[in-house]
Image 1: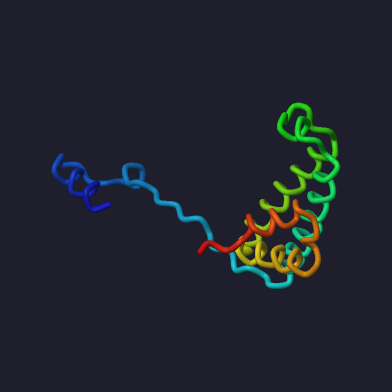
Image 2: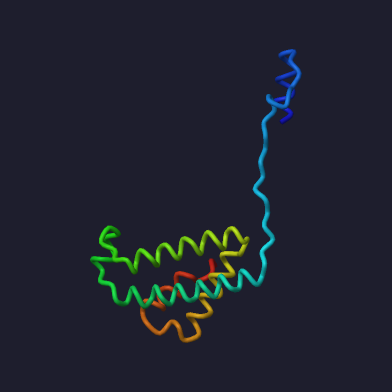
Length: 125
């Protein structure tokens, strides 16, 4: 900002509102613990549905996104919508992942796929 003002002064022009850069800052959203808890519960349900669906999906279908059935596409859309809602609500992705990890660790991780998801959601170490 000072460089813009100095350059304007060096050219003999006075800065105007139009000539000054506008800095925008994204508003900080104070997360609502109740909303974040509900979203964490939804994430737990989503992961359970993903595990169930992936257990029923063969590798060929899974590896070819264009071959995905309606169920896989719906899960992907649910996940994207949940991410967007959590982000808009200011919820911590780490807290939501921790809730999912805890749920899978409490008997939800009884299949190899669920165990893999638990390992992928492990906190960074």
